[in-house]
Image (cartoon, rainbow, N blue to C red):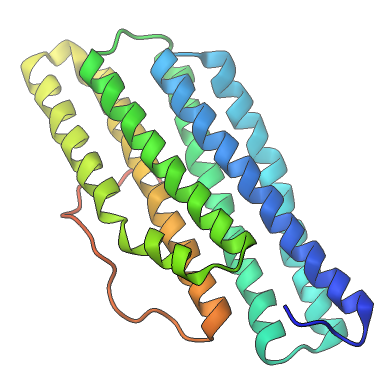
Length: 237
């Protein structure tokens, strides 16, 4: 962001960026803890994730309110206006990541502590780690205004899709072979889809960073594997 003659305007923009960064840190923690609670069957940790969403929701409202006030007070143009509008979009995507993590926490509490096959635990852990890595990378790209790093996240979304599809097929196989596993596997299907959707929101954030820096949207379709059925509420692209 360029320096402005009115220093209070600079501070208002920095405050927006700081809130986005705080939201990103909370979302990363929620994703990590949601996956850990799922793998360990830790209902206490799941409740921690659920409660953390309250702060994320509050921060999103703060970003929206402050952005509207800055627009009304400063009547920004060009880069400044694009930064402020993009901040609202970023906050919405990060807040949705928190919602998806909270959904996993709720399902962990509903499942209790079921026995899970080692391959399922490994698959869920790998999917969570990969998604967390991408989220961390794109948030760093935002903090450093690194468009190249953001585009790298955008271009590599397909491996999260591929891993999710593999886990989806494995869960379906368990359900067909052992009807007693249907309830637990159904919960895991939704949890895995929620993690995959967090990856989608990370790529959405990458697109916003590109737009924020260039003023131009990414018009081409990003690489994607064949989709599997959606879960919970729709989110992102």
